[in-house]
Image 1 (cartoon, one colour):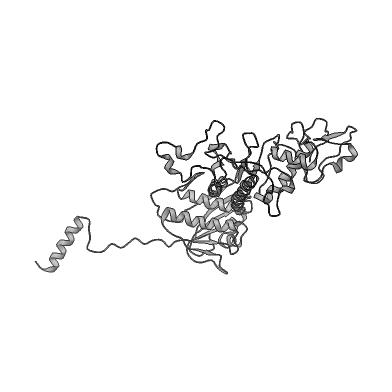
Image 2 (cartoon, one colour):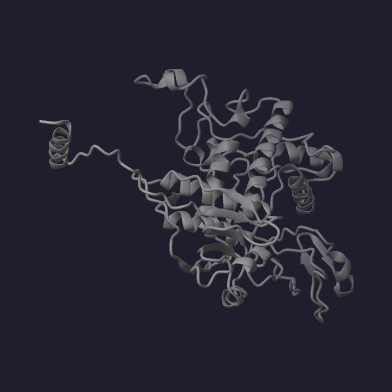
Length: 447
């Protein structure tokens, strides 16, 4: 049998077994789409473009090329344009009809639209438009594209399917708008069940998931003294208690939950006493957030009390700055009636040489509100009282009866000077949603 016959029979045998003498030629991979962002993209637009690239890679293993908007014509090949609706980049890649329809795209709304090659302004290629009515909407569009690819988002993190997908530019035509202006969470500082344990990275990890869930609000509640103890999320004191750079000069003991602090049914215990080998999980004999390191169960000196507040301020400042970067509003509230910590009460009595009255409580609250934005860049609200400081605070109403806010009395002629911009009012009655003064003898109405 000659060589040619031998090779023929070998080829027949291999073909029966499903094999081949010829090396397999890999299937031609489609040319990857290019992600294009505006030349002067905002921080959120840049993040949206990077997130599109990241989730495409996590699902398909294809790392798509990225570039900023070039001068002149757009590059060839399929494109993913990630930009706000008013960017020239959108007009360069979309048809006139589509551009006109984007005009009604409201803030926080988004649009995903695949433009066929015959309609796009990029010759012979398709364009996927990832756009929003504002920066936040553009970021929401990017995360919805990730959901189209099979990714699922939760507060604790992302879920990526194990089975990779074959990459191809999806055919999409989707539009979405929020039902509510504010959508978010209030993780309650509820001792072991809440963010008492969190550090900066924990705050940022949770806040970073909110845009993926199309949320834009993050609020915190703060327990005051004796309920069961003061928490360092909110500092209460006079303006003189704040240093030039925002550090507190005077404060009072405050703490977050830790293993050495027992209250509300939880016993204080050293981690070395934990059973079944769980003590080996802890490198210290106490456990709590980093702002409490060295001061558990609670700060015992004035200097230590100040450090707990300053550490908390830095932690929340970093967390809330990140929140604002990704379009999440922040809020911190406390409880009413306001509980003035005992050390603050004593300082008020000593310095002012007057008994602690509602008026001095108001001054303390005003100082607290003035100091906190410098410490933590917060939006303070949630005190359940009417707001002041926007233009004329009171509407004129003919009345000869004196009216009262807290313990301040004045007649009708004195009312314009009675309320100053930025004043915080603590009434003796219960405020209502109409904005009327909280005391029954006040006929005036807040604007």
